[in-house]
Length: 131
Image 1: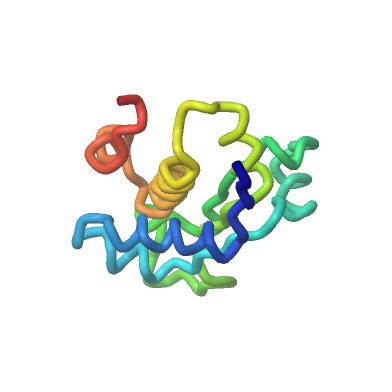
Image 2: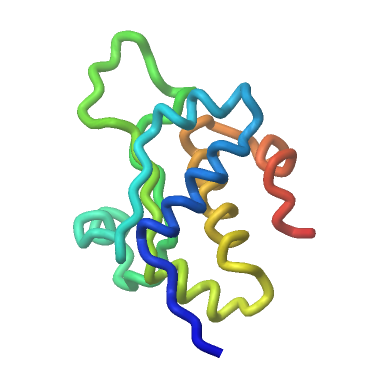
């Protein structure tokens, strides 16, 4: 069987579909967050997180959670959810028990959870990952 690994654009399509499937109360806020898919976490992010393994991070929310924002804040950059293609592919291959789309959706939901300040109960209403 011949399989081709998904491209960054294809992973972004999966992530955007995940955002579009969020409950309406969250969808508009999530659509305001930039979404990017790149091969690996940038070196500066790994350094800031004190992480030496570029495969250890599958996604990242870069921004100020809504629960911590103030109208007095001056944004320095747009809130962004980053997904990392190669670490996602690596985790998917290692797990062997979930579809690639489900893994991308799971990581996407959890990164947006950081944006919204969601609790574990909030996340569980949308992403029933453990089932």
